[in-house]
Image 1 (tube, rainbow, N blue to C red):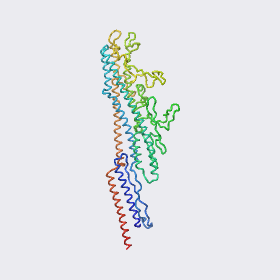
Image 2 (image 1 turned 120 degrees about the vertical axis):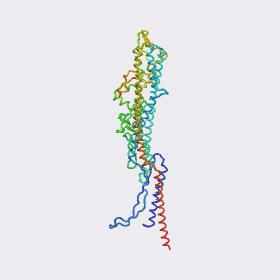
Image 3 (image 1 turned 180 degrees about the vertical axis):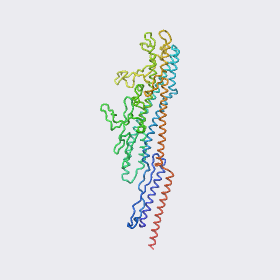
Image 4 (image 1 turned 45 degrees about the vertical axis):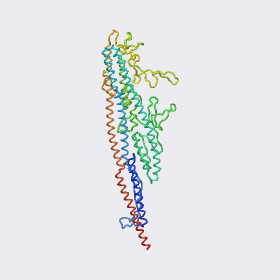
Length: 547
């Protein structure tokens, strides 16, 4: 090789060393940037010049032409990425579920500085005191007062559970919107990355970093599977359905139920629309199958969005949801912490109010005017709320047909204290036709709260009384929350461990980059020195020949 040709070898060393130094500086400047992936300069040999090729020699006589800068590539581990995203999504599922349990626990355990259990105890105490002196006007008034406080506390807790459902419902909508935003951005990034890399010369590493960060975020919201196509585009599936393809983004929509206002995610392109109502048919287009059991083996416990849908449920639950068999109960509300708590709590209030009313009604004597109102009906301590309703034309709507008012049911939000008793508690009387204090009625009222004939839900086989039922509701919440907390903590440990291993690959080490900087700087200096030597040789030869 001529001396002039040797200059190209030195030049190639300068170029590749400079590129490597630039990449190292880029790594160091982004060491603290979230989602940044460490980059490496990939160098390859240039073609060799063959001087001779003799069968007598072991190898060809060749001279090298230096080194080429091939590409700046990202350092990532595909399997660690997949593992992290799956475990991260599972951690988000259990974190959301655990947070829902703790919020419900807070609502049930303490309210406005006074626990609901205290109002239940006060009601029990008022009944016990009345049983001792049934004709005592003060104790009759105390019972009405305690019953009113009991209903107020019950209503406040149930309304807070409803508010929690509504807030979680909004979060469902926000997460669906975010999934669509991420999917569209991944699609746009695919287009940009393919344009840059299609020539095989340059890698769009910073765009790939953004796309990887979006995949990380998406994996926390919904269960995804993905693969990278031959030209760098990523194809994404969500819950087994196409989300991002090479030419299309499958939008996820939400259908808002007109009765509950709850959102249900569905695939827009899969749904047919009813021309009369304009509502989509969700039978074959729903994103989630919430009837599947929650199982790690099935990968049905992944993603914040699914956890929110399960915790929220699909309607305002009441005591009627408890009046089913175990299979129906388990397939409808058992997996929803809010609905299950609402139903059990409403069932408790329903049983207390109706059983107390029945006790008073059993002692009513219409002929003698004992415990009956002015219409001759048995006096009720608790009454249904009658709310006037009208249609769009101003016509009255029948009571039992009004949406949102189940006025035939004694539910938490549908009851009030008898207004006549609020004005005049002594209407209870508690003195029978023989002018004797009605001690049997007092004992009957006591028995309502302490008779162990009730069940918390269809899965429970041990009976309890109404006083203990509330404690059982709270205990059940505490135990379930502890289970989800343990799974969440274990899952967090696993996710952090996987992320630590991933960061060992993709993360930037200042010490390693400083060593690389020294190495490439020395390589640059060596190439520079090599060029100087060739230059001196050429100068010497020219000067010598010239003389």
